Image (cartoon, rainbow, N blue to C red):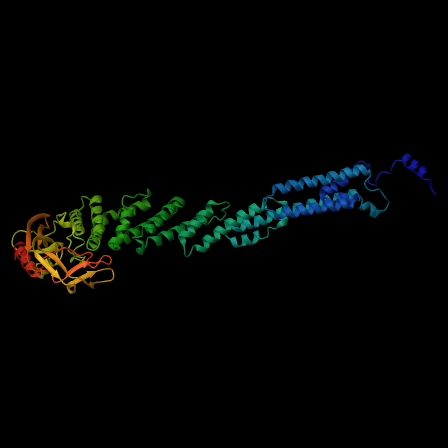
Length: 546
């Protein structure tokens, strides 16, 4: 048996043998650190520190999973991983310094191959090859997708981008951002291509968004957008859309965008504008009028648009005049606006006189509550014309030899009293306008007694008979007839009629609440429709030249 103290003295006296690679023990202290730098935990394993190796490899694996999973570029986690990597390498080096020679050099070929220097170099080389290969593969995936995108094959580009995986995100913090930009651009392009056939205007807008984004690699986007804008403009300027203001604005906005983005499309733009000018001239007048209002005095600053649209100036006056004549019967207010627009824009045109007469006619029709097209003339209140008479130069004269026709407003009994041949049918054959005001209460004539059976009470539930007898005062009925010459708007005659007839057959009053006498009038006027008709004919006959 060897004496332990003697053995220890021999070990201290003889220096340790040099490693079989020619290096010194001090040189071998760095290989555990290199091994941990290549793969955290490997240097601790070479030092036979199993628990430290397990801890280092577990934390490293967790950091790798987190970095590959969180949104990129994940700089915080990457810095934490780098610090942990450096800490494990430094710790392995510190342990090696404390232990002296990491692994005793032993004889044998297999042992020499597995010594720390060989393991560390192999781990470092393998890690460099792995990381470099992943970086190259990430670049390859995005490059393939970019090439497919550039050729217009975005379906293949999206399929290639699906190959970006966690391993690529781990080694390249920017691969996710590049892939997402490429994916978003291709998605916009595919959306535009999908909408091109049915919705060219919307597809052109999507292509504008695609071109404004990054990266917009497909070189055919500008040409396709130009074609789509031309198609959208042609659809927006077809015959049914002539009078559509919103379609008009969109269409000319599309044409202006084509000229700004692709000046070589000028002939096509000119052709579409000329076709639209022809469509406006052939459209219904009031539909064309909307387009004329939008385009009057509008200049785009490009001859391709301005020159074809300038031809509409010569065609506008007859179109506006025809529109006004169409509207004057049913919508006199709009008709007057159209006539006044014609006069304002083309005051020296040969149709200005007709437009002035049309504006007069529309104004008079407004004052006459739309007569004669609006047939509701049996109401008792005269129209606004009776308070504000106006001239209509297209009416016949009220002087000279008759016969003359009259238009009667106010009391329906006066209109009913006149023969049909005396009544005017429109502004162009009405020489006089008769305004009949009344009946008003004149002088007292006596009293009228109404039993309940001769009373009508009007209420929300409908008419009902009276409940108690009533006695009211009877007054004479007075009417005022004013005759205005329609051509001049001047008052030519004014007559007041007083009728002293009998009591009205029924007493009508309105019921308010439960009181049977609520709403009951205290006086009535004499009623004699035959006398009124005879008096009206006597007044109108000389005016009408009968």
